[in-house]
Image 1: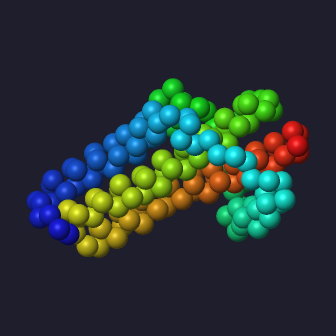
Image 2: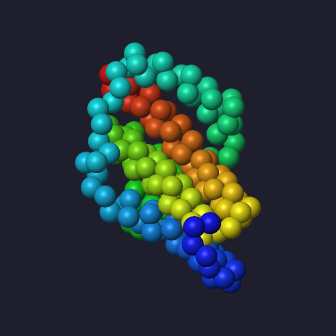
Length: 160
């Protein structure tokens, strides 16, 4: 703990600040230009080697069983909904891939930002905040990466 605050203020800042942090970063990420997330697709051969990562997603993390329970905050801020695939049109799929990158960046930033709350939070609560930051965002990151790999595979299958 680097900043000394009374317990009331620590609790108030954390209870209000952490959810606001999630929402503010989600909103800010929807405001970023889409061009920041455009990358060339990996060649089919390179993407085939991503099967190892997909194995982890499906067998170790069991993504298919819980991915539908995750919220998608992007539509709250007029962003791109990633809850279900609406089309197999090439441009839509490319946009979907970019939006998974946007979402992943948002969740990595949320982990870092929420971890800063340890500045005024004493131990052991500071450890709980770091664990929370990771556990609240890791499933979303895992799901976004899993979804991106599947959509890239679909693009390769359908358009190359």
